[in-house]
Length: 83
Image: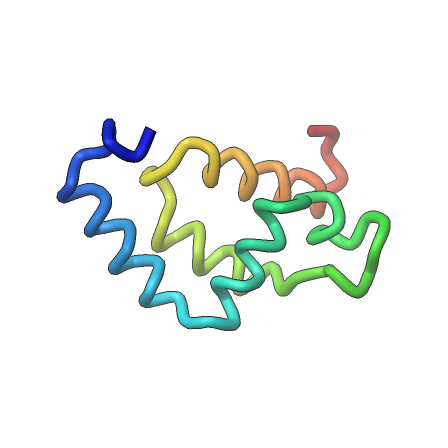
């Protein structure tokens, strides 16, 4: 899978990911791992800051389909929409 990625795209993603900083990156990882928990459904201790996730979506949106889907599901859950 990784070998199918264009090197320039991979470098661009890495730069954008690094620009998020550790705190935001950790929250994005929580969203990817479990969007429901990140949205506060089930385990409130895993709930993440929507502003942090929005910043990540602005910086990383469109670079990875799976990431885009996880972030969209997270925001749908916050809005009370079924995913």
